[in-house]
Image 1: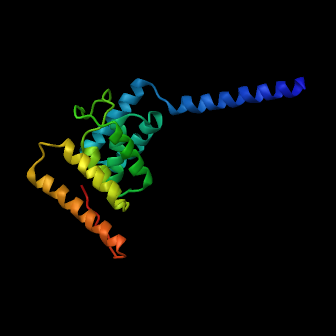
Image 2: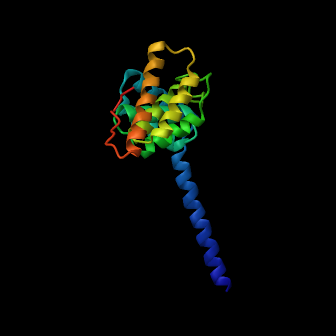
Image 3: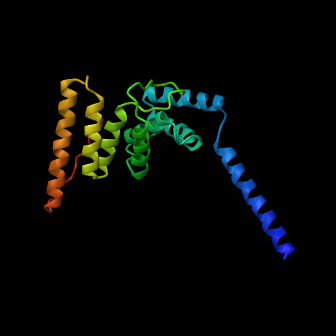
Length: 182
């Protein structure tokens, strides 16, 4: 009996050691995190979204609660045509970190900008989640009171399209939401 307890204890200690090692590999120092963030942000600003995705993925794997990283990763995936459940998931997490005082490009700012709602709405509409997309568009509209009339009109038209798409789909119609790029 004592041998079984000793074996169980050793196995438990070994398992905990493996888990800690994997967690330590996923995390990086604050300095390295900031460096990688700055490099990825520079690529995003330059429009090199495809090149930024691997860096942003590393940052996300290291700290999955950083709202700006979530937003940038989701936005880059959208701009590269990689709209899937993971993209919606990341943008949804970022939307929960929305703050109207967001400061883009500062690694210290762990919030997401209002634009996250727009990208979330676009992703949800492309995934044919009309009701959720409409909700995200409405959240976006409430976050950007100073937007231009043209921009607000475009968002209102997208909401109308989604409402029509939803009613046509529920009536058995062949509604397809056009791929609208931000």
